[in-house]
Image (tube, rainbow, N blue to C red; front, top):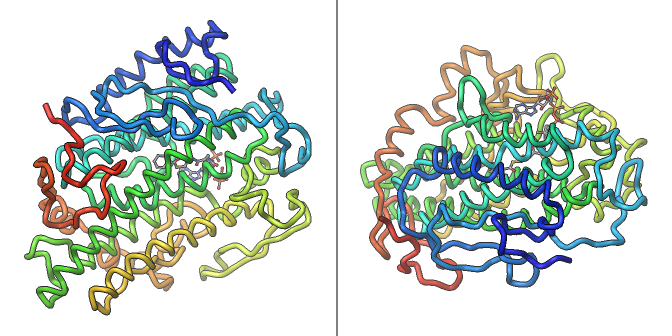
Length: 471
Ligand code: BYC
């Protein structure tokens, strides 16, 4: 294992200095990345931010805290330690040694997976770029920037793989990752959810809960990859990802907590006039972010995913804990399907149903969040509850893309959907109301009225710590 080298332009633990060509190629991509960060990254100017920087992948080295001016953040390339005896755990190459190089026959598929993963990282930074202007506290502002710099690092992780293993095509793809932009009419980001706006902090918490959680599951499957550098990269990314998940989970907790307090104190559901976010609006935001995140798993059946699995490129969540033959050629799975326009199930081969398998793992995890938020409502003595909408609700990808369904799974005509969707998804009025609450609170130890303070600070610091020095 090479220890992290911080002496060069690009911090890394991949012995970059031993490959001058690769080093030069990445060093010439670096200014383009920094230009992109200046143009598309956070808009709020700051002096410095209390950030976590990875200086080593071992022990505590991955979480080194200190105040850093953001443009001077050391984005680096870090892969988890190599296991020299690692064997492929699934697919037709099961039992063979993991690959250190890309096999020619899988080059196009692997590149595609890496590009799709890479595309989401800068997309989320673009989506979140204006949120600093309306942060509810310095603590939240710091968390936003932490998420942003780490998404930037995750882009570096994928660009490293493209440059190191895919030659000229890889370098071109790395350039394209900076050229596409979230929401752009001409060159949008690849996956749907990454072209949606994140215009307010309720959206940010929902995004980091639901959409970052797709990241957790997709990275979990790529961590199983037979292509060892991809596996090791994803393993380290997952460590950082846990913080993003914490921001989402506790962010929604804190909004629900504040809403519950105001509802209990004012004895009404209609708390908009009291400066907090009504539960009905929280539910609509949840419906939106959950449903667009379900789309990120692709179709219920997919020959792409079957091929990825068989080839050993993308495994299942917790592949090694599954008790089956890890080849799945003779197995089947029930997947969601449409039958005569009605919501039904169909039996398909386990391989083509792998997107469904992963989506189910994700849904079970999301149910945990809803349970937690409902416990907050319960402890406040309130009878109201939040719910995950039906899997067919508001879908643009997969079996239900062609129909409209209510959150309880009732199939609707287009006219009914048109008439009723505003009860379930945020309307312009809801969004304008949430935006009206988004006033920045940059005073140490203070917090906006629509969200409760966090229970814990960052790295043992108190809530009123100076997490960010503004200019
Ligand atoms: N939007 O065969 P199908 C993260 C396309 S998030 C638009 O069902 P497949 C993060 C699909 O490309 C994790 N198009 O799809 C979170 C295909 O196109 P072609 C990101 C879509 O391939 C927060 C066609 O439809 N990582 O890290 O089985 C902040 C047929 O689809 C969408 C990954 O996704 C969509 N939603 O599965 C920061 C991992 N869905 O080939 C970061 C890598 C599908 O016909 N990606 N299409 O032109 C994959 O594993 C798979 O490509 C997918 C789709 C799961 C995305």
